[in-house]
Length: 115
Image (spheres, rainbow, N blue to C red):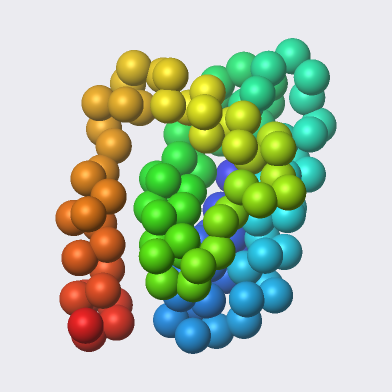
């Protein structure tokens, strides 16, 4: 899954800039599938690991951006991803490093979209 993170990020970022929504949705479906492989916890390898740390910044930013710019909720019909996000938000180290959503949206619109 670590090697897929670049492909995942590229598919979503491309969609945000007007590219294929099909590829973006497939990328999130792949994450849902990966989260279904282990039953000993809600994270990619069951327990919190480097894989979760690698994906957290992407998903943390893409979730509000896709909702705001594409009216697309990444958690719809993805119960494992929904649980992953909920559990991730319980990890103290993660909570302390989260972006301000409004600042994120403003920055992305300005830098990437020229708005």
